[in-house]
Image (cartoon, rainbow, N blue to C red; front, side, top):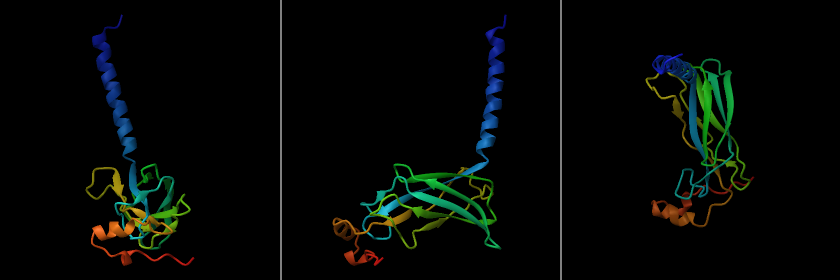
Length: 170
């Protein structure tokens, strides 16, 4: 009959071994994280009236620094908080990587914000950062027309209503 004092060390060793295997597997990935928002005030930045978009599609692309050739591409979707988390395999230290807006699920907020359509992110473990997360700047779509409450919201932070981006003539 096996005594519990003999089984516990075996279980502890097995657990340690499996933990090491699991953590080395997880370290093969870097996770690019960010948010996608609807610029409800057409202000070109996040405000107190900003709405985060569920189901927005983004794409991470990496290109060779010298040739510009595409070396890596993967898409992601935002969750109910407007957040995405894209697992990236491998090290892309010698590449230029950017997250791009692809599509908004909101018909009234689908115009891509110029200057807010992509965010560059460094994807390498050779930069002194021990965390596996890499954070990209927020990306934004413009609402077709600014909310009526935006005038007061912009005034509250010292901006005139003229600071809003004019509606596109598409």
